[in-house]
Length: 104
Image (cartoon, rainbow, N blue to C red; front, side):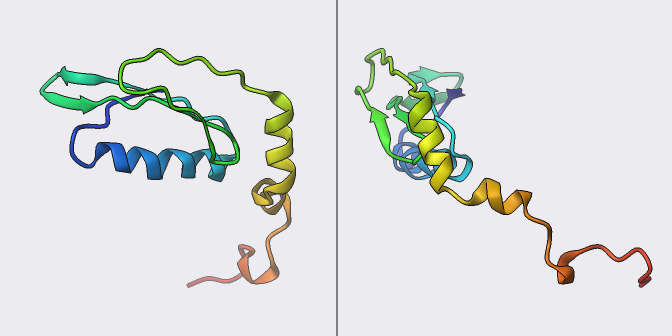
């Protein structure tokens, strides 16, 4: 994804939000962050690659081009231990089911 994390809080925010989104969704997250001045912002760089378990796979530095092998076995392994998808597929408990017969 294209990103624009700015100088100041941008770098620590990216190091919090992006691995969390990788883990939340058990996907690889690959932000390509700008560096330097662009469109009225000063971007902090720091592109990286996070695996589906939220762990960093590659973190090259501010202006280096990074490539990473996205291992499908690592993706499957992360999804097999992360219960999010199984939880979503499970039927909702009775207390959470919509009751059409109840009116406010």
